[in-house]
Image 1 (cartoon, helix red, strand yellow):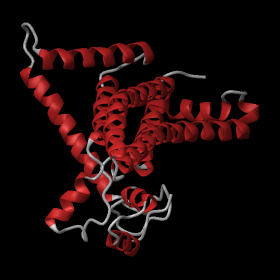
Image 2 (cartoon, one colour):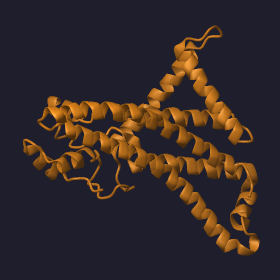
Image 3 (spheres, one colour):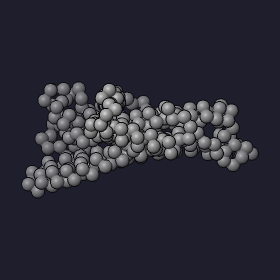
Image 4 (cartoon, one colour):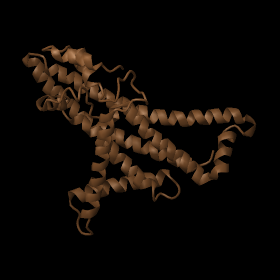
Length: 283
């Protein structure tokens, strides 16, 4: 996917009714430090992705802090009960997957779930909300693009999966020692006599885990965002059928998307636990 140039957006905005292609292309652009030519380009900083990722991380920390502050030993309220169910679910999953010290891993899994769920939930915001807001404030020239969902940006999801890869390597070295970890890289799974092949295979395995983890989350959220844009285009048709179809389709997809939002957060958390659990075990 290529993002449109600023001049292209300005030209599109000059039309009273931009074409569906112009509308979708504009909404899929990022507020970046330079022109973006590829879906993933690590030389580009997507400032909207960074902003919303950090904001959701801060809100997630505040959410859990409030839950801890309001926790009581008596009959829990709805908020406390929901948080306790979530914590218990994560603890049970981490206990069944990771065999070892979970004093850091269980809170990590909880953080991953809450953070990814909050970032995914931004997809429920109206697709044209920020464009309209920037237009009312007269700052649309400063923010020619703005994508709200960080997990619909491959740069963002690959960044998170890189963090998981670092944890996999860290626990692999911590549990097995430097010598044991290096020996496993060269000796597993076919024995030390196949060392070059083993090393290549293990490198590919680590890379595949990292890429697939980020791509899975990105693909689902990107598809969901694209469907919301297509539904918004349906509502722009100057017919009663288009408007009714927009309302019905938008409502149905939003309800179904609730499942996708939390399911993808759960899958990302579970795969994080699985990969860290594998780092605790030898081949």
